[in-house]
Length: 125
Image 1: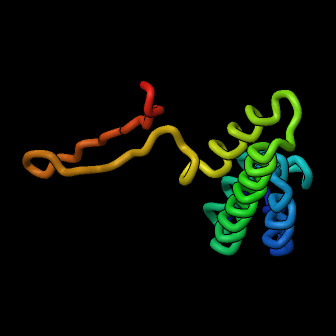
Image 2: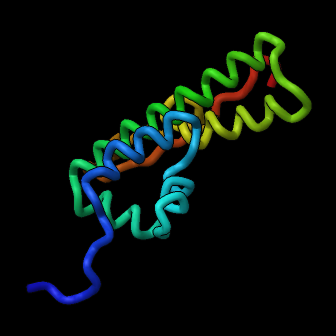
Image 3: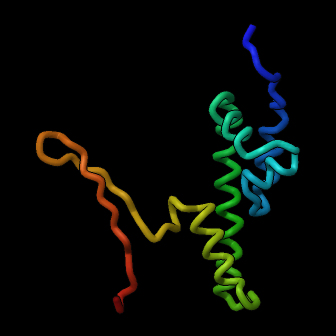
């Protein structure tokens, strides 16, 4: 029998994390809502494949929520600072789609990997 503290993980957290993140909240916010640390969430992601999948679904729903806020702001429905908040939300919660930087891998001479980062800038830069 393995040593250490018993886990606080409950299978019900899989649905709960998706529900929580549907309104734009983060995994850290979910951790706080159930009384554990973000580090505990990371352990659960590593140890419970079903929770990993739920966290991925939650992140997708979170990113969708932030994108919707961004569209609302683009249509003139936002107050002071709203667009900045939406940009940070989209970049951080939907970084695969909303990042300023794209990374690519390519093999160089002798098969050694080259890591290339490309920053996209506006047309006037």
